Image (cartoon, rainbow, N blue to C red; front, top):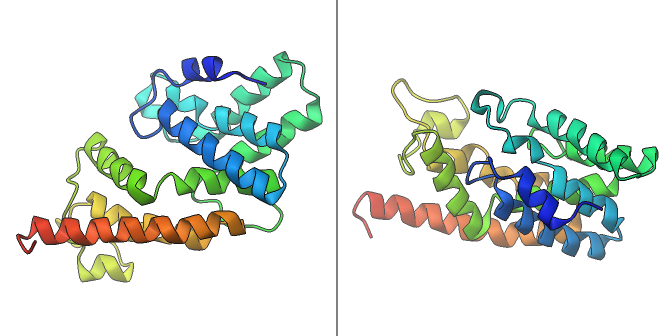
Amino acid sequence: MPTLEQAREWYRGADAVHDFDHVLRVLALAERIAQAEGADLPIVRAAVLLHDAALGENDATRARSGHHERSADFARQVLTAEGWEAARVERVVDCILAHRFRETTQAEKSLEAKVVYDADKLDAIGAVGAARAIAFAALHGNPFHREPSARFRRGDGLEPGEVHSAHHEFEFKLARIPERLNTESAKALGRERLQVLREFFTRLGEESQGRA
């Protein structure tokens, strides 16, 4: 099993949204959900420690694109070198490949893949999610608040000249997370965390417009 000390090294070049603190938070959530759902804890733990390892690469142009595939390849190398059985290595790899937001809640996912997906997505909502959304906007040179247009809220894209702010990211992606979670344990946490995040962006909008 990879150690926390090993994993910390893999994330030294990662951005503030996907750094080792993110991994530790996801690990705590994943262990909690795995125990509640009866998942294989070593598989879950290894997958979490390795799920974003490719984001520690220094090549910023490759940082997000295909990172789940590169992380999966890296996990295969690490765990094979540790002497893991090939079948268990592939179970970890499957969890890593399935953790991206674009992956839907498919019944054919293993329980361990569902746990890792859920834990990773839960870290994007709640109070931590608010902090990460602001950090993500700053990393991309976007504002933390602009009021999303009616067109954007309908799902028809940005108006000409409209900027994608952290508030837009909430409306477009983060607000949908609870409905895409797999396990009952995660869904309960997701509903709670979404309420916190929704209240944050409501208040942020009010303060940005001088209404609070």
